[in-house]
Length: 119
Image 1 (cartoon, rainbow, N blue to C red):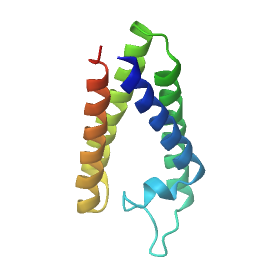
Image 2: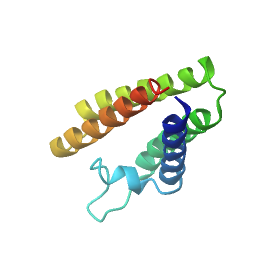
Image 3: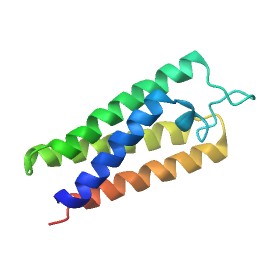
Image 4: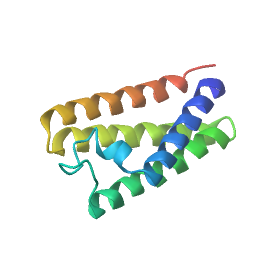
């Protein structure tokens, strides 16, 4: 399990840090930017919270000891991505964005889940 899981953890942590610093990176594909491409304060707050969450989970996937701790970190990532797919897939204002974001979240959840099967 560790090799692919560690890579996915590093990617998750990097993406989380990126959207924490630059919320527009997530807000734009979600259709949550203004007409001028900016993000409002409430959107920045929400995206930053998601970014911190993803950074923490990614670091856990990267650093957890093999075995139960690593499986829990991966399953936490899978659960968060499944929740993101459900919430964003049902509630984003733009229909195309709902589908795009939900498909991406489900794909990342599946990839992380599959990484836990790697021996």
